Length: 276
View 1 (spheres, rainbow, N blue to C red):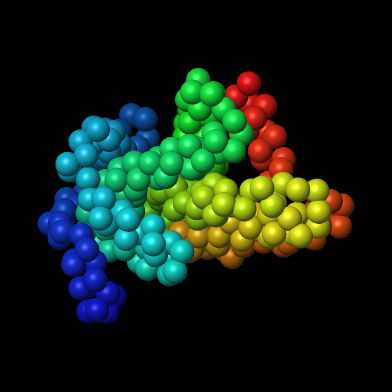
View 2: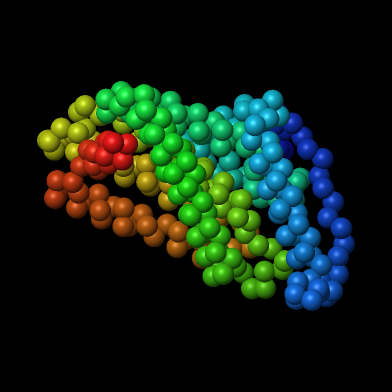
């Protein structure tokens, strides 16, 4: 890392004292076959998870300014965001975020966009609350838990360099990668698209072309930012396979224009049906 990059990180987020890992013999195993290092890693992961959950309601301890900075750079230079993940690994000995500020800010933008969709869909107050519940806890967090678990299993099982040298992909990091990739999708499909929804959902080619192009850009962002996230881990191999869905996205996009599929209209119909 260059001096200028290091300066940018320290200027945005307060410095944290590095944790020194104890020297542990890898040959001592317990009755379950786990060595001392693996036991400490599991205990450490549990402690980090509890610390993260405890901070969810402690807004004064969250660094919202830094989380907002990350959101901006996810659009203009996502590589810098993952460069900071490497910095966190060097200083705090973990890849995953230890501050839930990004998740809280993401939930805020989901609520804001839900207000706009509630107006467009003509939802009453109860329908609006149901819509927020589905969007925040199912579409974002629930789907994110499934995707993070899937990537956690695949990367640890099939993409580790041999030998792994005690490294593994943290589940929390996989969830962070999903949140990073989800943010541009939210901004494009829930905020930007909302301003043109009256044009997009019309049954004419230009509206379908514009709306489906936004879908292609948004999902392309998701695939690319996901690829960057796992490429930042030096102990993974063959991360380029994570870019293969780009070809499928392009194919579906072309077919949608030929066959008259309107993804945005389908999304609005799905949202309206779900809250009824």
